[in-house]
Length: 207
Image (cartoon, rainbow, N blue to C red; front, side):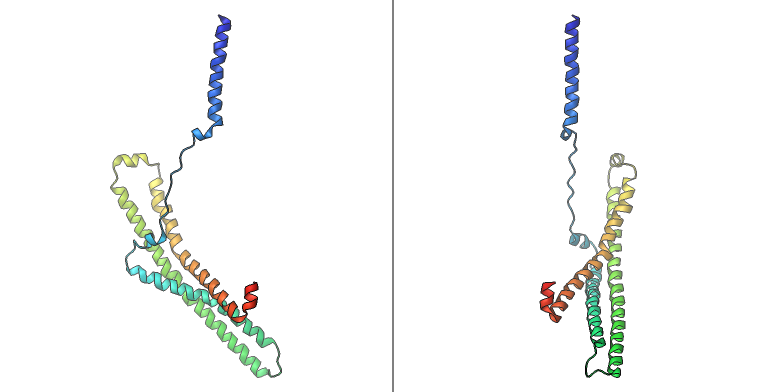
């Protein structure tokens, strides 16, 4: 009887070890399915705003394009400045001073251009971002208020406040000046390529 009891005990222990090892070696049994989150298009979020903000978006985008075009203008001005310092048979002190003065005025004009258009695009798109943040915060809060009492018991502590403050702030910051900066960089790249092709298309193709 003792041998039979020992054998049965060994079998049971082995079965328990087998079940535990199967649990440890098969992590897929304990993996939770990740919730699939569908992204919302940017145009759908901006379409929720009143139509008055459409003017802010259009003017802000145009201002961002103009702001990006000033940097290729600086490159052209630097090239003209280097040409002035190269002596030529017909150059005199007077022509040199006039050329340098002209380039200085061009630099001042480009600086004012960059400040004005940069401020305008950042201000307008920043206003749009603030409006989106306020609109989403009101919609989320209104949606919370119509839920049943049991729904609040199922939510972790601090999650609702985090959604209203942190998550919506991330959306607002992503829709504000980031769009103006993106459009400005894209226009700078495109206008820079066009300027390079106009001045020296062979070198531009090689670069």
